[in-house]
Length: 68
Image (cartoon, rainbow, N blue to C red; front, side, top):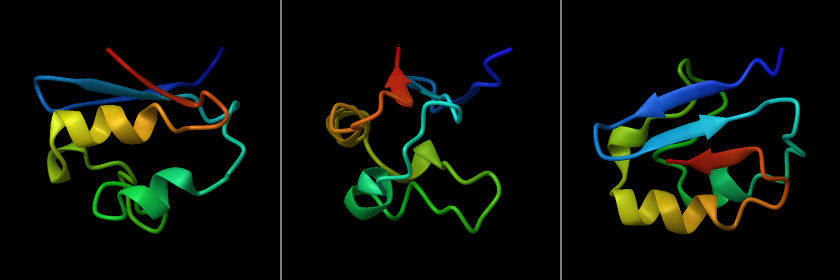
């Protein structure tokens, strides 16, 4: 079981795979309005544009974040 989570804004679906996450904080540093580990859900895709999300996810060093 990979225990991945999906978050969608209707245009893009962000997939987070916690087992792959290296906790590099690239996501939090780039888009703090979307990624807040102190909140639940910790990913709020509605707080950024699809392009902002794609740009940030492409910078994820571990591959824990992806989209479709």
